[in-house]
Length: 511
Image (cartoon, rainbow, N blue to C red):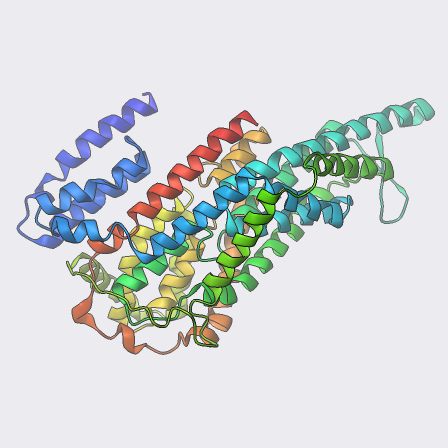
């Protein structure tokens, strides 16, 4: 059956099949009905996700879960304004091509040696992905990768022809120069196969770095702001998560994950395959990058203005509430919201897990989240899981951040499938990969990055956020906020992220 027809059939049958929940006199059941419908529509996308985000405006008031006035108030929260501000600056950076200038300059400084070139691509992608969308960053870096790999391929062919002409004994073997010892290594693999392996490694490195880099700042990717918004709504007294504390906690783990990914890809795809290039190809690669950089011309007034505004924005974000000194936002207050009961009910049901150690609970949830986010968008996954985890933590007497913080970050660790994230899709399409090419290293990256996050949580996280103690701001069971409001709080962000990602992905197809 055609997938499109299947999606439409399921989208029509599901609301009818679950109608008993909608007709229930209990508010929790009616809320569950709406949640399942919205989550299913997010996953199947029978209509645009931004349109699905507007369903609660109609369904919640009609079904008597929450009033229309209260829902509409939740479509413009502080966390959304933070995201919109970052989005505006990101669009300005992309429009004036400042991100391309930064990327090319870094690559020129790194050099053309394969292992350092890969690291240069990854570090550049990571840093850019912290501030602009993961999709836009990947779409910009992939053409540069393809140009570099193309030049290596061309040089490899030329060297092979010269070797065959000079030595007839090597007809059945291909000889490549290695940088480490200057000796010859024999291989039965053709230059095309080796360069294909090199291209695969570089494309995977870029999409991995883009996914990981988005976790470095509060505005880097959707789940980060979902967590921030939910804390503001569920626990207004909580002041732990700010732009500064987020970076202090997660940048070390982000950098560690990128270095592990670089070492893993280099070891598996480059060193073990004996893929190297000589001085001639290095010069040609440097020439490609230099030519692209020179083509940008001198820095324009537009770029200088955007760069200045970018630094001002980052400064204001970091020093809004840095914790180590008084921030400029201390004079601002916060607001509270409503209750419904579904998250509390689910949290109580899940509290049976309290027989396990807290560390085991968070590990299980993190690995399950890493698998779930492979088939659902990272923001959708965070939006569905975080309210339940909040109430679960309260039910078992654990600091809510101990469960919510790592899960919000792990939602971005989707490395296995091309459908998991737009960066994966771009790399998959550009490299003509099959699913196994992405899944085999991806599952390793999933487990490694989850392990790094658990390590950071139990070391730096405990030190920064006092995660071993139950906070006073969470000890308000009567103020438990519903899944309804916490999901609504993130719908606008989801729509913005989806629109931005799909728009950039469409542009990348042209590239």
